[in-house]
Length: 54
Image (cartoon, rainbow, N blue to C red; front, side, top):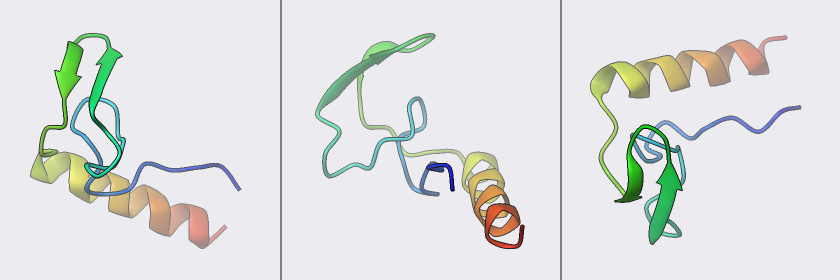
């Protein structure tokens, strides 16, 4: 099974808030944890459900 981003992971990189600190990822560059959008949360939840059902 592949590792999927948790629904509430960082908006830019998907890392959980607790262990995020500061990360680098394009297009955000160096960033701290940011709340994901509602669309990102929904898409991540649907992807996890799809992976679970296959």
